Amino acid sequence: MIFAAILAGGIGSRMGNNEKPKQFLSLGNKPILIHTIEKFSLFNNFEKILVLTPKDYISHTNDLIDKHIENNEKIIVLEGGNLRNDTIMNGISYIKENFNIDDESLIVTHDAVRPFLTYKIIEDNITFAKKYGACDTVIPATDTIVEADGGKVSAIPKRDNLYQGQTPQSFKINKLDSLYNNLSLDEKNSLTDACKIFVLNNEDVYLVDGDETNIKITHPYDLQVANVILNETVLNNDK
Amino acid sequence: MINNIYKLKSPKYFEKTYSELDVDKDVIVRPSYLSICKADQRYYQGQRESKILDEKLPMALIHEAIGKIIKDNTEEFKPGDNVVLIPNTPTEENEYISLNYLSSSKFRGSGFDGFTSDLVSLKKDRLIKLPSEINFKIASFLELISVACHGVSRFKKIANDKKDILGVWGDGNLGFIISLVLKTVFPHSKIIVFGKHIENLNLFSFVDETYKVSEIPGDLAIDHGFECVGSHSSQVAIEQIISLINPQGVISLFGVSEFPVSINTRLILEKGLTILGSSRSEREDFIEAINLLKNYPQMISYLNNLVTDFIEIKNLNDLNNAFNKDNNKSFGKTVLKWEI
Picture (spheres, each protein chain N blue to C red):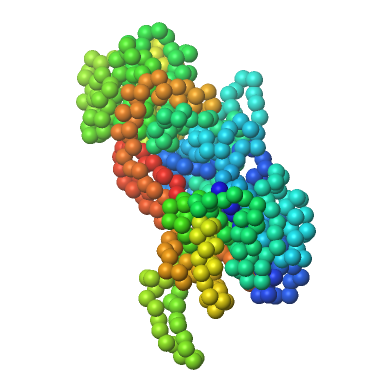
């Protein structure tokens, strides 16, 4: 069985003074979250598409899905957690409670605020997770990354080995669950991303080619850029 | 949903653009194998008039493609079905004029966006399910084969019964396919191909005779002629056809020229010739092309020789490289595996 988990748990603290979390802001004619769900809903092989959202936004999310997405019976809205990995683990708990999964069952996790991902990236995630157990979508780093300590540069890692992490990140569910439970509380608190659960356990995570336009709409500027590139195309299409 | 479309913004420059696509309407298809046509190259190389380029670009190129069904809101297809994509897109019907010649019909990669995108939404009648055993590389240029089928079927309807010798001018991709279709449909006719490049003509092993256009025997005559040359050279080709063709023959024109071509009307009148122009194909021609490949499997091995480049496209650099490589060869189709 294959599940999608769309992580819409953030409250958008970096998004300025908007009232709504960033995933509910409009991109073109629809909320960002809806664009993202629509892309996943094209895949017939997802058993369910879980949308993990802040508790106070569960009804709102359900309303939006009803309004914008026909045949939405595969989409389940659940409460997200405080941290990213809590949100993923909430999704996994729901899957384990409601479905009879086996060791080959997969979860494709994706940021709700990356609506520009391509069909191909999702397809590659499913293929790689099936084959290798875990994969991460990345693009080669273009900026030089500087490591600092005490206000001074301590190292400049070789750029050829550096990548910028995107999503989806995809895993065999049982393996992710057991590796997470292997971690100490300190290790769990140090997690900034789900792939690190594998890395801390010395397990391989394979790379899927991402795309530089699979941007994360984090800052007000990102939303402006996203709306400009979408609207520019609409203008060109009207030509 | 946001769809990613890869458009030619100006000659030799592709850019990624976005548009909203309604996933709850029609049929959603993921392109899988595409093939570059000379018409695409004319846009890519900037060989169209600058006024045309200004009007049409940015535009996604490529009108020869197959794909996989992702979602069908019409319940005609199943997800995963392999289909050929029909580029002609009618907006009305007409009692007398077929859909591919209606001026109101739009054509992918010419009147509007071609198939270089993440996903494409098409009406169900713009798709035909492919047989499971079909060769995908060859199927990618079914559109070109369907144009040959279309022209040959129109020729059949109007030509007289004497089809002993059929002459094909042009040793490129279209000449190859027309010759192969003619040899298959009219196995008892002698097919003669006239071309400029001896190395290309050598590949036409299934025809009866080949000649360089500069070395045509003086006593040679044909019953009907097929022009698959296009551009400046089509004038010379048409001139040769008119001079070699027997009275009341049919001259089928397939080659596209950016320039007006002068023709010898005096000889056309004297010989009572019919000139038949064919360019775009419709649904029934695609079906005919699929049936031909199914019923005459020997065509596959010849068409395989036509695939001279097979390139995986993972990004816009790959797409640029494929267009440049395609432009540097005189023969063969460039097939793209769409992995972007």
